[in-house]
Length: 370
Image (cartoon, rainbow, N blue to C red; front, side, top):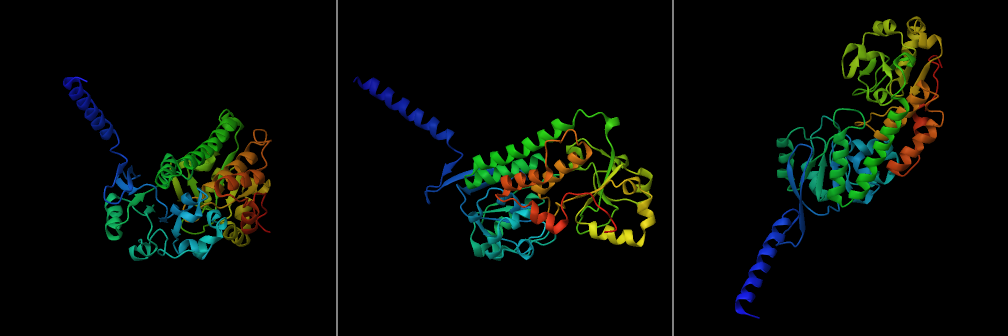
C-alpha cells in the first residue's frame, strides 16, 4: 500500500476512535477499579455518579423502602429503619416481606428523624435512596458523611399517580439494573389510572352524588373532621368532592358544622379514623343523625393507605371501591376485593386484601353504632 494511503488510514482510524470514545462518556469506566460508572440526575436535580449496577441498597425516609419493595427483589435491601421493623399493620410492603424484620437497623426512621450515617455505613450499601432530603445540601451532607452516593427520590405532591413517583421508580430501576421492572410498575399504575379515568370521565355532573371522605390519617388518627381538598382518590374517578368548595388542596380539618351544611349524599370513612368516629357517634348521635348519608345508610369504609407515606397499592384499590359505590353501572364488572388482590399481587407479589380487611374492616357499608 502506498505510504500516503497508509498514513490516511491511520488518521481515519484514530479520528473514529476519538469520536466513539467521546460518545461513551456516560457511563464511563473507572480505570483504577475497572468498574463502570453511571451518572444519574435525582429528583432534586443533583448529578450523582454511582457504580453500575448497585447490588445492595438502603432506602431511608417516608415511603423510600416501599418503592424498592415494588421491585420484588428484597435481597438487594441491606438494612431497614426501625420504623419499618416495629409494626407491619397497614403497610402492605412490610406485610408481603416478613424477612425485612431480620435485617439490620439503619436508623430510627420517621418523618422527623435524621438519617444515622454510622448505622448506614455498618451495612455497606452501594447507594442510599432517600426521601428525607428536602434540598441538595442535606443530600450532599449525608453523601459526604458516609462516602456513599445518595440519590434523592420523591412522592411528589399527590397521593397517587404523581409523575415524581414514576421518575423515582425509574431511578431505582436504572441504578439497580432493573429498568424493565421499573417500566412494568409504571405501566401498571398508568393502566389503572387510565382505566379509572375512562370509566368515569363522561359521567354528567348532575348524575354525580356529593361525596365526603372523613377520618383521613394526617400524622396520626383523626375523626370525621379530617378530610382532604382536591383529593386524589376522588379525582381519579371524577367524583364530586364537597370539600372542593373550600378551594383548598391537601389535608385539612373542617368545622364539623360545615359537614352538616354540605350534607353529602355519600360518606366514606377511612379505616384509620373509624374507631374515633364511632366513639364520637356514641357521645353525640344527634349530630350524625342529621346527615342524610347516615339516615339513608350511605356510609362506607375505605382502607387506610397512609402509613409512613402513601401505600399506592391500597390507594389504587380504594379508588376502585369508591368508583364501584359511586357509579355501580360503570364498575359492574369490578369486584373491589378481587381488584385489590390483583393490585397487591402485581406490586408486591402477594394477595393481601384479607389481612387488610381483618385489620381495618375492609370494603363495606358501615353502621356507626356497631
